[in-house]
Structure formats: C-alpha cells, structure tokens
Amino acid sequence: MKEKERTNSFPDFSVLMSVYKNEKPEYLNESLRSIENQTIVPKEIIVVQDGPISKQLSAILKRHQKIFTNSFRILKSRENHGLGAALRLGTKEVTTNWIARMDSDDISVPQRFEKQLTMIQSTPNLALIGGQVNEFAANVKNIVGCRSVPTTEKEIKNFAKWRSPFNHPTIMIRKDVLKEVGGYMPFGNLEDYYLWVRIILSRYKVMNMSDVLVYMRVDEGLYSRRGKFSNILYFYKLRKYLKSKKMITFYEQIIGNIAMTVNIMMPSSIRKILYQKILHK
Image (spheres, rainbow, N blue to C red):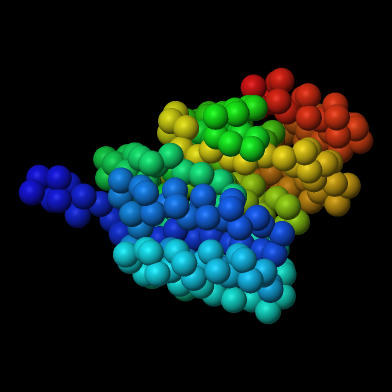
C-alpha cells in the first residue's frame, strides 16, 4: 500500500516523441520498450509521425499501441517538417502538465522517470529537469562518449553562454512553462537551445540531475550533421540574441562565433575526435 501511495503521489506526465521515415524499426522498438519498462510509466505516449513512414515502422507503432496499458496516441503529419514542427504539433495534444521528451532511437534507463519525478516532487516550482547521457554505438554496452551538463541553475546559466545546457532527450518540462515562453519556435537545428535560453531568461527554476538518464545512439553521420553550414547562421543569430539579453558580452559573442566557425569548417574525422575525446569524454 505504501508503494502504491508513493507512486500515485507523482504528477501525471506524458512522453512526447517524433518518428520519421529514416528511423530503423528495431531502434524505435527498443526506444518504446524502454518507456514501457519504466518503474513509473507515463499516463500517455504521444508519437508524431513526421511525414509518411514505412510499413515496418507503422507496424512497430501499432504493436506498442496495443501493448501499452495507458493511452498511446499516434498523430500524423502529411509531410516531413522536422523535429521542432513535430514537437509543436504533439505538444498541443498533450493532456498532462509534465512532458517527458524521448527520441525514437534512444533508450531510457529503467528508473529515469521515477528519479525525475522524485526530484520534481521535492523541488517546489521546478519548471524543467534534465540529466546526463551516455552515447553508444550499435548497443548500449558499447559506450563511446557521454555528454555531461551542469546540474545547478548558476552553472546551467554559465554553460548556456557557450553550449546547450540540457540534453534534450532527457528533459521533463511543464507544459504551462513551455506555452508561456512560446514553445518550440523555428530556429534551424537550434530550436531546443533557443528554448532553454528563453526559459532561463524568464527566471524559471531549472536543473539537471547528475544521473545518466538516457543512452543516446550515435552514428558516423552525427559528426557530419554537426558540421552543416546552415547551422552556423542560426548559431550567430542565437549568440546575437544572447548578447541583446545581456547573457553574454560582446567579447564572449565574438569568441563563440569564432569557435563555431572553426567547428563547422573542420573535417568530420577531426570533429569526431574533438567530440569523443574532449567535449563528450
């Protein structure tokens, strides 16, 4: 009875996920299974089909829709518009105030939601909570890196001057806060980073747990995507925004712009070493 009472005292939450045609069915299956096997399961899982998907992916979704004991809803977008647009669509349909993000090829540790909900319960006015990720290739036993993010508000604000201070697939966020700051706004590949900045500037209480909450799948294409030239224009724009809000100085703006320019211009093989040996060691 005590266990049941403790579980029922947690706030209801939803898992929001997007899937598109290039996802591998086995990855999606593992990801959904990691949600269903949580010690505390969500009230609902909302999956946005970002454009047409394969029959195999559709079959995986339908199978899990039957397996999951609570609500499992599939929203369909006629065309592929990208992650940000998919999350905007999915957010509108969420019925709970807490939203847990999950990517369709990542794996959550079994106690992820219980750990986050316990912290939410003990931290008044918390608006956003994330955690650490271990990066893996092929299977979760093959850890190739980790992305460590700061845990306290002060550290998070300082970190945000240079890099995204949250691991997006680990976060749980209040829907009312997400709505208040404008939600996921179009901003190239930096929609999540831009969102975190707006939440920080609005002085909402945020934190990261020191625990690894998600195993993030990486492939060779990841390092090429981080070198896309189109990213740099949004990065410059974001740093200009940070400067206008006095989060960074003019000197910090220039240093950051130079660092990102070098990152974009370097070969993917060098970028891979940089991330695995230094940034995500």
